[in-house]
Length: 412
Image (cartoon, rainbow, N blue to C red; front, side, top):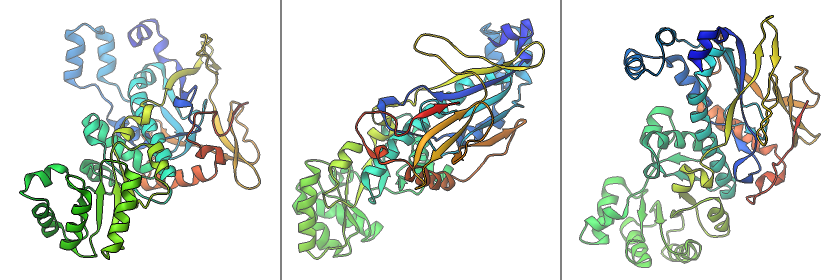
């Protein structure tokens, strides 16, 4: 596309691309924006180096004029959009990319790959967090996905309310709090469970978490409290009927005087399993596979579509697809969330007119201006924003069942 546009002169036309979802995957009630910070990190360094150009030349992917353009490529356009942690709905203009066709078309894949992944993870994470109530969740999915996706997933989960991650790179790179427990391999390494627990306690102190289901749970709990005393930090259950087992273990811990010892459960948990454990005496969860695969919706189904372009007379005009089943709406858009007098969201308003509706909260912000990033913010800012955005949604947003979006999208 770039080569052809450079050849016929349309590459320099000003255009507007828009990132949005036609629907929410899995018929979920809302989506969560994540990945904006990662996108703003990579954009200033989005370049074509000598090795990249050599590959394109040697494989005859593009011609010399196109290679010359790519050698000097620097994004000088603008981005605006939803902030991290904000909720979104079908048709929400999550990100708007403005510039020449040549510089904006090259961003499509990187924008979508970041946002589709991170929004999917953040949406699944949000559902899990709200199913867990006040109980914290540790992100533990690094071994179930690509090594870089694992870091991004930990970041997105933290935006949506996960308490910590077992991925140390996410802690180093993004400041996500880290936590973890021992594996069954550590117990099996030792001649007895008692020796394994003693070694762990000697190294990490009584506040550590002991994995107690390698052999016999009740015996492991007894040994753990015997060695650590009533100040044992926590035990972890990773198999069996977690609800029933948690009740039995809580009773045993209390009988042994370990009233403050917490019970953490793992084992292929998702939002449905977490919700089913609401009445069990569980103090925290560890979630891995379901989180890093989006709990059944590993992509946010976001698309990157041209919605306006410059005509020969220099005027920007709306454009839109008319494809059956995949239509788009033309024109550069703004978005607002309409609230009722109690502060509850009742509609997502997407407008082309530029006029701000009454009783509505603006949802978009400037992110990049003439190639310069202006919208950086802390990860905790996105985390706090999600708390507020979810709190203003109607109760239907809490439902885990398939259904319509929690609020309708109204186009004007």
